[in-house]
Length: 417
Image 1 (cartoon, one colour):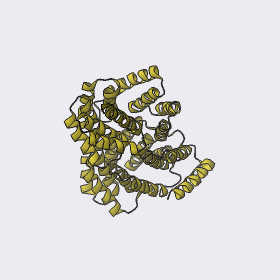
Image 2 (tube, helix red, strand yellow; image 1 turned 180 degrees about the vertical axis):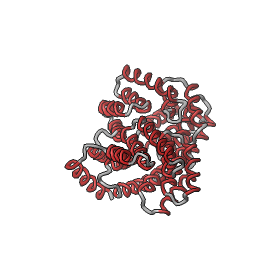
Image 3 (tube, one colour; image 1 turned 180 degrees about the horizontal axis):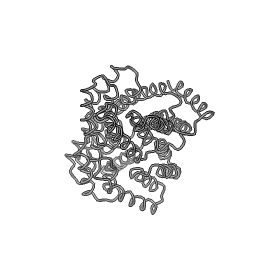
Image 4 (cartoon, helix red, strand yellow; image 1 turned 90 degrees about the horizontal axis):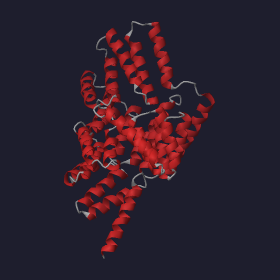
């Protein structure tokens, strides 16, 4: 399968290098939608078309302003034909884009009652349930997608993510490969996104060289793609090439100036030994993150870790983590909440939350390292060592810290003797 993928990547990049259009797929779609509106300004369908294109452009650029423009186009569609079904579907998609997951789930359920064989509506339910931590419901909706239309790309990418969360990295990778092979070569952002997800899976289990190769190919297909730049920076951190990681994350932040991206940049600056620049970046991150902390589309996970690990303000860490926990129970929110609890010496509750997260099946070095530290604080050395050893075996980000902690435990044990 990997040889086949490598050949496909070479063919794709060769074709695009020779005949790449000057505009992205979303930009072309925006232009076509505007032409349709100009031709028939009283038809709602052109505005739906424009809203879809603008939402796609938001993903391409990570610029939330395109979501705002998409909402305006959707309002016009609803004015022209109130309650049109495609417009209602787009409304759910935009709710997901704004991270209004609970509202999106309810709206998707209502649409599912109206049109129970619409594959994409099931996809919206997968997306919302995953983000809220309702994994059983997400899996059922994903299976419905495959039952209704076997092999469709929206189902493949969503079930691939579920496979990852459940710990089946190889199964997730295979599904992503299938989605990649079924995506037209002209859809360069879609292909780059899938390749980025495949690289992410490689990184999760220490296949750094494979991840680097795929990301380089993704950046040829879609130059400057912010998702690929972020993962390539993770590769550089794995390789301990911290200056190169900083350069990539600075480039990403110029393209997508989100608080969470600034947090990653600050961490990389610290790893690169650029302490004053890191301090400045962390301070700016805190300011930006606090400005959005009450919104659903926020950087509360990073803010909680900042207060817990960088600013040494555990009370603020638990305040932020609790706020997010009140809204959603996905594995990453549970991890942030558990770590904040641990930093506040509430280790019994911290262990409960981290174990709920790990029970989903996720293979994540950071989560297992956190579980090890929490177990150690409870005096459960055996479980702590097991968690830390698991973290170390992934050979991914967080594994080095787990190895260092294991080494310190061995040193302490020897000293005690």
